[in-house]
Image (cartoon, rainbow, N blue to C red; front, side):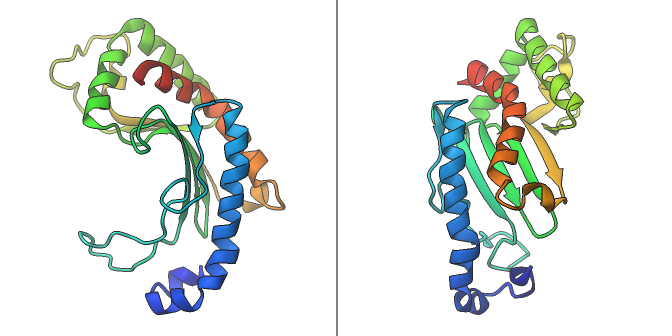
Length: 212
């Protein structure tokens, strides 16, 4: 909240100690603890408790943005399957900002090569049937499935496949969002978020099995 109201370098440098003690140190601890737990459900998970690794940097890239404020007012922590490059891989994501937090799993946006592979896979009836079962199960548990962007079936693909809607995604991920911080307060954050990750896990497993 304070950073939102004082989004400038001078204020940030004057309050760097608070950033270290109130954000960076707890974030490092979270990554270490969560990384250990995630290893149990995916041995290939990468958890590196450093900025620009599992801890997204606070500095914004303002070169092509109208918004020139230098710092993000949200925090992002990311754990990814090490078989692929960090931003190509299916991963586990925790998002925190002043008014809400979010928990996500999957791939936010496919690289061009991965998008083609994904489309080829969901054109196959047995693979897309398995994905559809995973998606329906997650939706029943109250999670949102994101990544659907396109309006028309991509060129070169059959619009009459078993579930053609999956051809319209540019990435696919499960998402949970809440403004109820009591749920993750009092030292419960790692356990609660791990429980959500575990419920979302079938989507991660499908992505790793079919795309990597």
